[in-house]
Length: 112
Length: 116
Image (cartoon, rainbow over all chains, first blue to last red):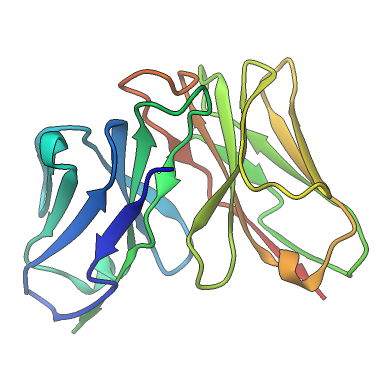
């Protein structure tokens, strides 16, 4: 099945710093989303981005589907950005078993 | 607020017991997914229903079962509980069955299950 790898696994930043999180996937995908899991466990939708570039405030994301990777950019990080960031993909060819497969996540801690 | 409602939010039960987790999808969504997240683990797909029918199955144990009712809410039943079943169980929903682009998935806040 499709493999979804995220890097780095852990990241510590000072408040105000910028960062780039990467998601590599091993096969073609129909759908791709980025999520933020906050310290209380809630999974928050950040972007639906199977291709192209999107921006939402301090966050932006780019997916290059032909090269099978997606990037999440966090600028001017804040302590509230702490948590785990997941990339999830829905493979294009799955023999009828369509589901989102999650990467292992990047654990981000932003220090005040 | 994603619009996906899960109950209960927290549950503590003993080994060998049975529990039922409930999920109401977002208004208009026909697909319901269940995921399990154990401590320090990623999200593992359990099962998906679309408009009342099972659509996809993941690594769901035989002790676990689920169903989606005509009003589209779903229940996940966990029986003969073991300590290792302690986890955060998420329900998610989407409009489509998942075989097309544009299928955005939204998660509920999860049900924390502790088996003692």
